[in-house]
Image (tube, rainbow, N blue to C red):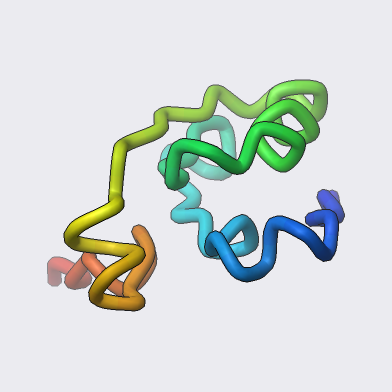
Length: 70
């Protein structure tokens, strides 16, 4: 299912969400409240983190901070 991100949350990495557990859970940056609510309304448990230093200053959201195992 597609969850739309409002344009005003693009600069704060609203679309940069890491899906977990087959899409039932996700990791997202705190502060993108509309996107978080839309995900929750779609049945996704959203785990948020404060990313002011590592993500926003470094321009890398949750998908950029992961490494596949395997």
